[in-house]
Amino acid sequence: IIRTFLLTKNSQLTPTDNLLLEKLSSLENRLIYAAYGQEALLECNYCKNVTDYSMFIVPNVVWSYVMMLTVLGISTMTKRKSHWRIYGVIFLVGCGFIELYTLLTTDIRKNAAQGVIEFLYSNTDYYRRIAFIGLSLAVLSFNKADERSDMEIIQEIKRNQEIIIHCIKATELQRTAVLRDNNLRRIFEEFYKRLETAENDVVMDQGYKAARNRTLGKMNMPRLLKEAEIYVSSITRMKEADTDNELVAGIQSSATAGNSLYE
Image (tube, rainbow, N blue to C red):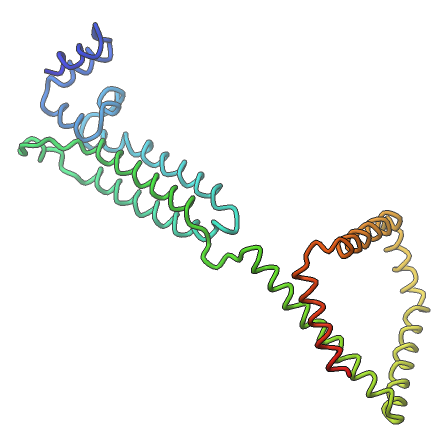
């Protein structure tokens, strides 16, 4: 039957086909073929018993999981996919353990007593591929649940800017109230005089001057000034072009609220 099947696929049998037919003449080899596949039956030259054949296929199975773990690590490098790394590793380790346990502990002689032959290696290989495909589709389809969209990030920036504006207005109000009171103004002036004196003591220190000169000597000040100028010019152009009307409107509304509070 096997010879007839092979001849339907090819006009003549290859040396591999002849070797396979020769080995399948015995019942034990047929059981090994069904349990561990054609590669183990034909290529394992040192195999003497069932245990040898089962151990022969272990490296191939382990290698397939190593390759999938590598693919998983590369595909989960981004923040949106990083949560899949732990789940994927747990899933693959669990599947690998179950597959190896099944291959190493199954009694292949039960196939001889059953009416339906179970091709153990082919079935485990099939389900392994299904598991890999399922995991790949899950990683590809589902991103991190709490990942923020661009609009949410913009809204948060607007809220933070509103808070900053309110803080600035409150600071201005506090400063005005302090300067209007004679006693508070005197304390205010004395405080900043002490700060100025302390700062002058630090600036005039020779060790500070030497450290400052060394640090400035390592910096490319013309380049830093040029980059700062370009940055400021870009912000100015963006404001003049009014590229984000909603953001500007939000800032202006916050400024209006702060002005009303100031008044």
